[in-house]
Length: 143
Image (cartoon, rainbow, N blue to C red):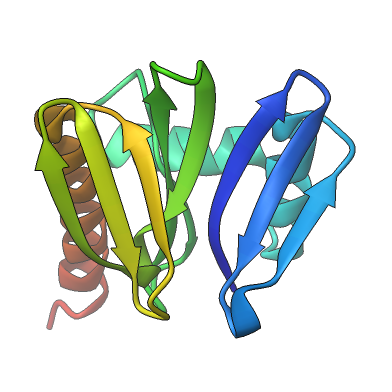
């Protein structure tokens, strides 16, 4: 599974996978990669964003739920220092530590990533993912 996807420039992305800290370069735009990833789970990127946006009543920085059963959600963060978009996999984040606007994210496999984002923004995205998964769980398990 994907730990995170980092936009290197307008035409290339770096995909970091969980097994054996593998890296893959993808020679296409971020939206194309996300669309293909969503299609592999049976929905379009636009449809996935609309569903989450409707549940959470948000319009910007909308996460994508790939699999609610496995808590696979990708959420966007903008690294202001590097001018890059990064999509994190919510299910693989273990901890995050903030010093000023520098955030160190540690994943379950021990890998770490540093990015320039405020604690409030990062925590807000984590809360959105948690809340969406909680809402889905409650709706599916109503008696």
